[in-house]
Image 1 (spheres, one colour):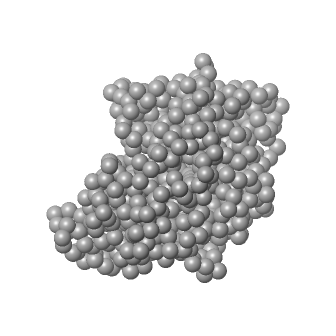
Image 2 (cartoon, helix red, strand yellow):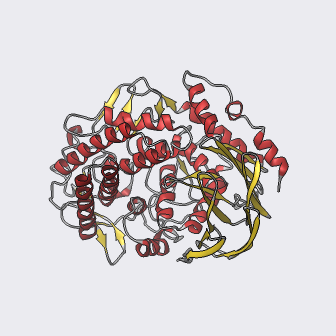
Image 3 (tube, helix red, strand yellow):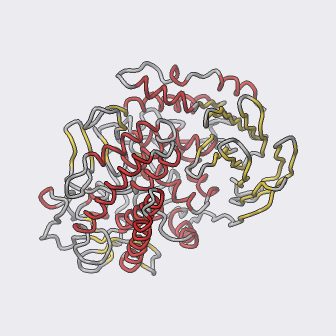
Length: 551
């Protein structure tokens, strides 16, 4: 095992690598990072430099917004916090590194909720804004995962539950004008799809700046929106979990019923069997046949079973004529004549957006499509290896950076993908993932990192992971703890007790696991899960691998 890389990891001071600090509060955030114990080292030092540059840039994205408490900002040209991103998926990723900032970010959207139940779509130094809804990632899922990961703060959970309940009521009252049970889009900005051909000839904002109104002279509005409807399905599913946790059993059953009702509405109105796709439906009952990352959003909201997800992989997500560009995923299908690959401006007309990138893992991992997710991560990490500005978008053809800089979804995308691909990731279910992979040199054969090392402290115990092509080793409290084959993921509980081994390669990985003073020969296929119990391994799931399509 590579002792020199491990020594370099142990000698790394993240605060020092983050560079000079520029504003009050940076020290507190870095101190929280230090408590997480997160550090990264790589044999190809460029990726390591990008990683710590991301940490340095993250400090620029944390400051007060409408209130006085430091919160996460969108970054770049976007001054403030947006509910579709900063207040949900961005904060969900940050929760593994600086949970106090994530909690403050979530809380402010509840604190500035309007009396009628509407949450602000953004918060800036000028205060809250309510012009549109701009919903994508479900807030309840993010809040629930944060709660499970970070000490189960019930007053926080109750506060957020009450606010999210009121917001559900607002959506039901004002965004179901056609009585279908679907959530309606009144404008392009309601879904954050700036310049998307999905919303051609539709206003960017609701009528007269009122989120309760749509343009009465529009020939197409309102749209039954699959992504907004899927958001509410997932939101209600997690509100049921939260109600159960708070001991409100009657509410839990009612949220479950409402989630099922919304799911039925989505499939009854927005699902096209012929295309096997979810489309908007205009006021005339016609599908808006623009294939966009609307699909990925629906899937990331846990809609559909694995059979449906696998079909979507084959036909769309892993199809190189649809969304599986050299650097995935595009925001519009590439075989659509309206597809626009340019990235020099804020656009969802084709470019690869970092918000789509960081929303992707949940869709795949919900259905245990771990291997397929690596095919998305490898080219994107190769692009990250060249990043200097942390832009909003990447070119789907070259991976070059596009519009704006110091954009928190890009910054958190680097931190998340490194941890997910070759680091130590704590899950809301109480597990630790030690993933035995390294970045692959897809760009001109340029080496990224043939060896990596990662550290994280969990419940006061320091863990380290060293990955090489020859094998991987977990260290616990400075001592070698578990060895396992490259190309697999070791899953432990939070104390480091081995629970599972997962195949992370399309090939069958064969090797030896060393654990608890014994050695165990293993053979694990792609996505197969081997449970470690009763002194040995046994297969508990073998779903196979869905191959990419070139058609």
